[in-house]
Image (tube, one colour):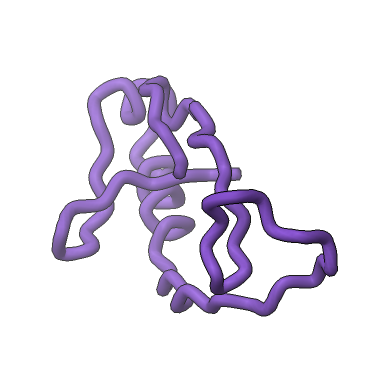
Length: 80
């Protein structure tokens, strides 16, 4: 999975460490091109399981999950 940092106006941002890792102007342009996509809207789907919901689970069918720690561009991030 590739992740991209963006600002509130959806402009891609890269840090010095990313520039150094990419190594060339062409690679930097390719990085920006790969990150230039529209994020699809979030869609909530019905539950597929018929198992009873755990206590505290949302009624829309989304099971509670623990946040996952991932690393993006050398920086730890938390996905929830």
